[in-house]
Length: 170
Image 1: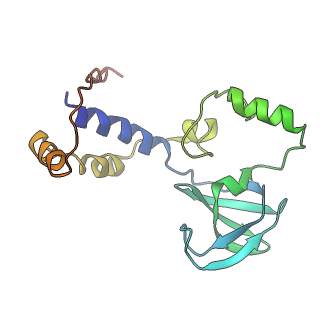
Image 2: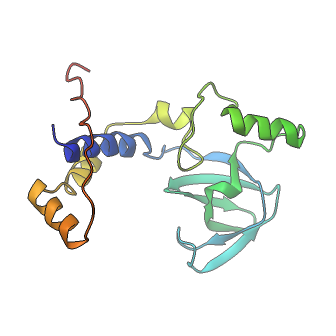
């Protein structure tokens, strides 16, 4: 199996896992932030949230939540909103310890992700998406094209061990 196919497989699994769930859920603003018309930093601001404001999380896209609140409807950065009700602060030392150990959440998942919000609930609700898999596979390339790209960019080659083939029986 080529390294490209291995990377495509890992990305496909990741994309399938982050499919948003259909049901909305309550949330709480962790800090003051702008509500945007689209899930982009430079999108038009359509409202703002204050710390402690309650929202209804309608959808997740990348690092953004589409929310509805008394102050507007639109997109807010995930880092500004917590799913569920706000928790009582137990002291900064406890929170720092929780982040350092990976046990800052209420679930049993002890792992980190590049974007906060991919938790146990999201992983349990993940569904296979042939469309997403085909989308990821469309980014594959040939070894020759990759070598040409590297040569054009004056990149230095490195040896990397191939990942083992996925278990087909799963």
